[in-house]
Length: 401
Image: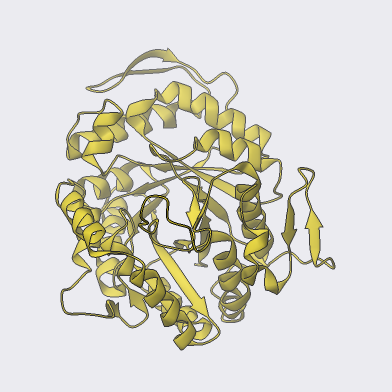
């Protein structure tokens, strides 16, 4: 089965560092370190992913993110074949309303909507949204949500009376010609059960190939017992360069910019989480491993400071391609990637690694990169984007306007 590659849309903002550098009050900045998530910059990232041949962009949801439905609606008009994997939390909207929203966007975008079900991982954030359910209850609610949603796609009235949702004759008046595929993530038994019963794709955050393969295999086995076929995937960051030395130098630079106080604060925050995936991501960090390479070309530096996916692929283009092939052999059918900053790293990966993966037959030939004879294009919004190889080295083109 071919590998589907996805990119990430930084709707919370972007930059060249893992965290905003600490500065004294009134200190003169040495350089711009953050890019706001304005629509001009997000369009640059989306168009880069589109032209390079990524299947979709994960469009996240959260307190510090722009609304994924609004962003996807705006960017669908500025892209051609790129799909938008919209993250949504079942506890914050009714399944009937989500079905209406998804069906409308599916029609407006000509079928370019995917759904990423997020049960929730950070208790503090969940409570800010008014959601007080515990871990397993959130996945039970997600199952009910997907039961109603699945019934609505058929265009017939749906009755459901459960612990979390109660609807009578819920109806989607204009169901889409093709229902959006459902991605559901998590590393816990509750997440695997929910995915086995309801999802098209089960996702788990990146670990070593063996660890990840075991997680994915359990979910596939549960789905098979139910007579279902479940595809599986993962989420990783990536730093790829022409040489391994250059890639590791960038990883070292990212880590050098994070002070110990922030690392300590992040550890305390991660310790409070009820997310099994976050616990496993934090566990990738082993004291005494200065380089934080937990497996060849698998770097755990992100797990020190960032919530969510904690592992990154680091190495030369050839090494990263080899490692992706190993993950694919371990059961990864879908791989969602990201990098700092997302515009430049999309080109580093798209021009350095994607050709190798295509040559080796891992990718569907239909996802081949778009070509153009112009080195520079300008959108209707007047935002220039460099279509050539040097775009990954040109920060002046990437600063949000």
